[in-house]
Image (cartoon, rainbow, N blue to C red; front, side, top):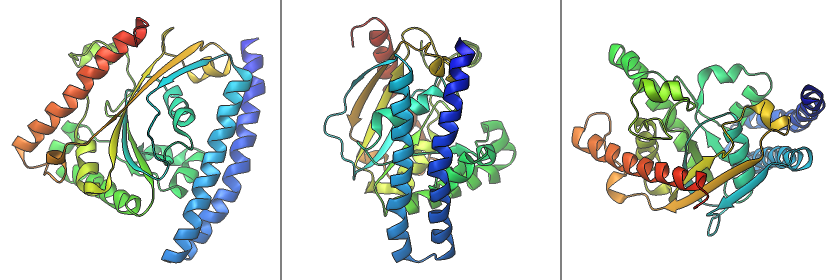
Length: 294
């Protein structure tokens, strides 16, 4: 029964993706062939509208084919034309669908920093490229220490992406743990948090440096699955009973904008302290959400 349900849902997802991606590719081609500002002004809303429509249909299918309930708080006072930095904990690929469902047409289209290898995902990789999603190397600290050029390469990708984002409403999304949570990863890095991996501050710092005062606020998002972390198959098979999401809209500290994270040790320590304070609060929020107190 589970695999029959998945077999029925998967083709619908594929059809929805193709129906939205084909016109999206046409608009992206026009934008690439005619790289003029006036053309970009026309094409960007069309591309965003197609992406939001695709997300809306996907969200509709979740509502239609599953009994998953969404308990969401903190969506008041959000601006669809705003400029946000969005941070969230990361446990599953389902997180992305949850974020898209929660924020679609309430804030600007979420732009994720993706691993470079994801460009080769059939159809979607090209769609993400057309929507100006930045593709990163995601190198480890050891790799960067051995070859500093790798770190500079990702910084340049971040800078170029943020230059594009300055001229449009945007929500820059970052999973700052850098990978999905597992107990094995948690134990391996001796994380001081009960429900979270250690946050990686560098990518967030680079965005704040590149975007400057162009960001209006931080949206700190906490995602909890009370019955256990699900897979995509669990979602499609109607085995995800409940999702809880808490959104905190926070100011971005002025003293953290425009610093040199790479070379200034004092600034880097200050930035990491700020990130750790966010993660301490998030850890406490997760505990409260699991206990039904938030």
